[in-house]
Amino acid sequence: MPLFAARPDRRRLLRVAGAGVLGLAVGVGATLAVHGLGGHPERAASVQRLDLPAGAASAATPEGGGRAVAAMPVAAGTARAVVRRYLQAGADGDLAIAYGLLDEAGRRRYPSLARFTRAQADRSPVTAVRVGREHRAGDGRAEVTVTLRHPAAIDPFAGLVPARTVEVWRASRQDGRWRVAADPVSVRAELPGDDRAPEAVSAWVERLLGCDRAGAAGLQAGAELYGPADLAELPCTERGRWTVAAPEGFDAAVEPQPYVAAFGPEVGSWARLVPVQGPRSRFSVVVGPLGDAWRVLGTDPVTPR
Image (cartoon, rainbow, N blue to C red; front, side):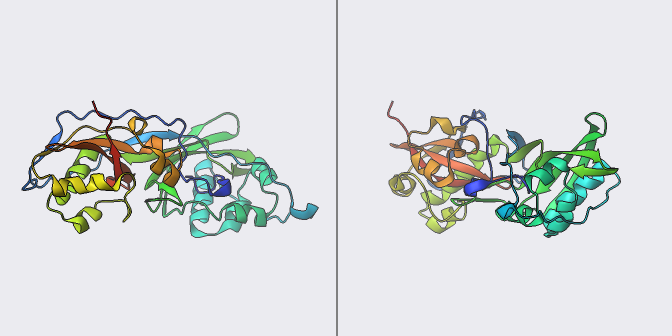
């Protein structure tokens, strides 16, 4: 989520239009035997970009009808400079500096520094700001592409916090200065490629084959697994050959309710199902992107054929 995009009522940090995302076929599934797998070679994580809508905030009014409290205007010489300074100030907690860089529309939305400060309380932290290209967007206006880094997380309170977002911010010349809009034009989350999901599930099932629950927990997004608890026990008790297939979109889940209840309906946009097959049983492992890797969230039953 962008640093300053609105998130009333503690909405999830990652909002994605539409619930269905197609799984990416990755060819032949990995094969597991009772004695375990060989190591996987290290390689750079692939990423795919997921389009997200920019957050919208409702118009604000001065508290109690009183006079709005304004911060001292801050000068910036270019569109790239004003966007960089705005985002870096927010990342550093210098909200008075950020407020002084808002354009007229942003000042109308947040007529006081106190109102603006309160709006930032639940925003995803930013650990690094990298400003990219600037594009003219009309007379006295420009759009600047920025990559923001965040502390990656998946949890029931924050939902998904991606490690990186690529955002487009709009700046405009007003009163002889460059100023920045309060919210980005667009946001994209950089996620690991779907082709990495079977590797994560293979490693998880391998540990369960050896009944190494502690080792399997280290490959999960958290200590708690969602979905039917008995499915995660099957590799330990049903010894033999297990196979891992290509990932599917979360819209194919048979029992999505535990995941929707924990992470919100947007889980359908970023979670994946990875089918696994044992000697007598089959189920799907639900995974989510944590930084540049996939982590296990839980299990999902497979509808009998």
